[in-house]
Every structure is written in C-alpha cells, then in structure tokens.
Length: 413
Image 1 (cartoon, one colour):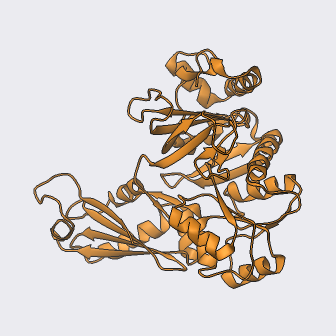
Image 2 (spheres, helix red, strand yellow; image 1 turned 30 degrees about the vertical axis):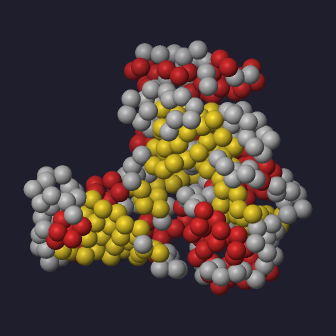
Image 3 (tube, rainbow, N blue to C red; image 1 turned 180 degrees about the vertical axis):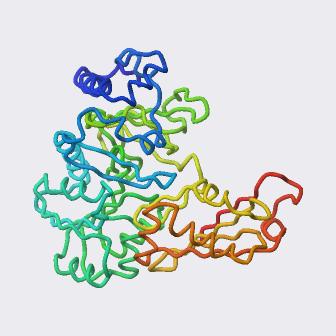
C-alpha cells in the first residue's frame, strides 16, 4: 500500500517518526549515504534498517539524551551481543495502549484475571503484556518463567485465571495433561504455533487460543476468532513485504520478507526494519467482519532453531561459533529433541582432536548468547556434542563425498 493512500491521521504519525529520526546519528548517516532526505514522498526509498545495525550501535539510533530514557529492554542478537531497545515515557505509554488493544480484540475485559507467564526480566514481551492487561482494567498477575515449576503451578492454581498468556512450549512444559483449572482465553506468542500444539493447549486449559505476532522492535498483530492471519492496525504499525534478495516491494499476497515501521516510538525510531521473517499481507476484509489488514508469517529467511522461552537460535550463529575449530570438514548435523521439561540440542561434527567435544560444548553453552546460557542454567536446555570420524556424516545423512559445500542437516524430533 502506498503511503499516499493512507488517511491523513496515519500520515501525520509517519511524519512524526521521520522527524524524530533526523535526531539520531545512525539514521543521519544512513540517509546521507543514500543521498536522501526522509519524507512521506520518498518513504519507500528510505534505506532499510537491519538487526545487525541495532545490535552493533543501539545508542546511535537514539533521538534523545540517554538520561531521558525511561525503559530499556534487551534480547540477544545473532552475534551474541544483547540487542537493546530504548523507550521514552511517552513511547512506553503508547506501546502499552497498543498491547491493550490487541488483548481487547481477543476478548479480554476488565473482569478477567490474567496470568502473564512470561520472562519478566529484560525481554520486553513480559512486562508490556502485563501492563497492557492492567491498562484495560484486568487483574494482571505476573508469573516469571524463572524458578521451580511447582511454585508456579501453586500460584496459578490459587489465582484461577480466566486468561493465560505465555509461550506454547512454556505452557506445555508446565502442564502436559489437563490443568486443574479452566480458562476462557489462552494467549500465545514468541514461537511458531502449529495446529497440533493449538489443539493440545485447548485440551489442557480449555480456552480458545489466540496467537500474537511481534518483535522486540515492534508489536505487530493478533488473531481474530477465525484464526486466519494476524490483524494489525496501521496507525501503529506499517508493514511492507519485499523480495529478500533485491529489496524490491512485492504485491499483496506474495510471500517475501516482512519489513516493519513502528509508529509508536520516537526515542528510538524503528523505520523500514528488516525482520528476516517471511510472510505476506492483505487489506481484504476478513470473514470475521473486520476490515483490518492481516499478515501471515510463513517462516524465517535463515534456518532458525526455536528453543524454550521464545529464544531463537539461527543456525548461522552455530556455524560461526564453530569456525575457529580445527575440524575435518565443516559438515554438521543438529538434532533438536523435546524431552518434556527440557530441550536437547545435539550436534554431530567430524574431527580427531580428543578435546574437541568439550571445547565445542563450552563455546555453544557459554558464548553463543546470554539467553542460551540462561536456558542451560535453569535446566530448560541441554547441549551435547558428538564427534564422528571423517566421512561419517555424509555416509549416514547423504551428500556427495567430493562436494566442497558443507553438509548441514537440522532434525526436529
């Protein structure tokens, strides 16, 4: 959709964010290099923002003094460097209102008791989900994912929530059979939700499951009662879909990389941000009756392993971590196994050095990212490495022995 087609009140919000970006060194450098002055007219010509830029220099994209920042959240970047997102007081208020709008769209009211069972530490989703429910007047009860499962079960069962907000794997780790309480609504986020897992959650907790899609950089949308795509509101979020190779815009309905502009924030503007998520959008009226645009998420551009607590581990991150080791070949095979209370990540590589197994396990456990280390420390993740003799992986898993291209296989069991 062209910017010129938006109503005036949305254009004014876009202009507000563009004006703010002119105060950030990172954007000034980008615009100067591209030889462009940001405006509504040339919005679709502005250079894209990437996750790597934010991870490397977050403060360069800040439009006000650090002393005026009211909230800081973080998630691990693909290099292991924490990716900071900074908010002013106004930004956080606008974002909380949007979270409230998403919950109300699902059917949450001021009469509900909502247990928000999400990480309440540096990850933005937990606190913002909590504050969003509080904003609409619901009784919101934070239950951090850290700590013993038994204590969390006792808290949740005493509260008897009518709404449960969490991640799919986190809920299934807490209860694998029918819970001793029933809810009206199960809110999920942070992970790809399959139809099988949706049915299991309904069986265990009794409520209708509404999935939400968003990023640390921008909340996006939520399902309606038809559960066919995520509705999002363009006075808060502008989405584009581009060809991931050329950056050219794609027509509505075609799958490409999702690009997001967040109109809720000016302290650290998010303008034309490449999400690395693949999907498509439509402005056609939904069968639920609402004429609100929708986005569907089809996967990731790069192969990604989904771990507990919504932690995403790009396979490229593992490959980079192994680049410093003397291995027979660059071939690796990864097995991801759900063991109930924990996830097992088992990696097979080829080599002859006796200490290679311990060295690789140490790097993967301690140096990939703080999120990975935290999952291991809390017993949610285990990493094992098996060293195989030269030629073993191609013989067992296929692949031409003479090929110079590394063999890579990822299996989800």
